[in-house]
Length: 302
Ligand code: G3P
Ligand code: CA
Image (cartoon, rainbow, N blue to C red):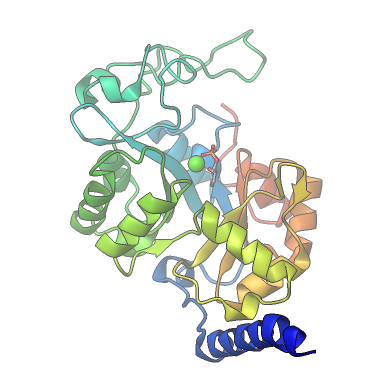
């Protein structure tokens, strides 16, 4: 009996005391200006500018998604050889342009000489309607200058030295601090960005997502004090179902906005909205707008 008390009961009581302390001192995230501005409606977020409709991560895509009527643009950034922040998803150029090799091996000028519409096709390679149309890889500064009012979700793709500092400085100089959510799969990059740029909204990194999902599973999400404001997750992680009405409700109770990626079919969009999702990150934003009964201001196809 004494052994039971020493080895089990005391640690359990200590754990209970720690959890109670966390519960009493925890505080939810506050809604960032970029989301306050957008109101309470479910958000339609154009993934890479709406890559199902036009060449991804280009000014062409961002301007058309904006004209279509989306709420937010999602885009990816990495560094060029000369340290500029450029908007491109892959580490290498082949999939989305007529360039070859790593993005980080070329200067901004060299990257901008490439055709970023070269490989886009909607018919499995029968036609390439955006080849030779002057569609370029944009710098992040160009996106800010061209679409200063449109909210953006910016994903740091390369955790190269200095990207976080440069992003923070550019957000400030371009007056975009209250217009963005910063996301990344690199947890350390996000932590560094939060230290450098306090007050700018961020999404949960992968470790934070795992922690929230685990706490939600054991019924302890209430102990969490998030250092982020947005939960951007896929519905499934490997074989495991991640999205659930309970996770969404608990995340929202912690002050978080829940946005799902990458949701391209209307039945799944409907299902996630019914579960309580706050936003849909999609390659086909016109489908989400249509589902929500919102007008599309331009035709999505040329
Ligand atoms: O919003 C998150 C989503 O963009 C991550 O996936 O590979 O398209 O950048 P990926
Ligand atoms: Ca992305």
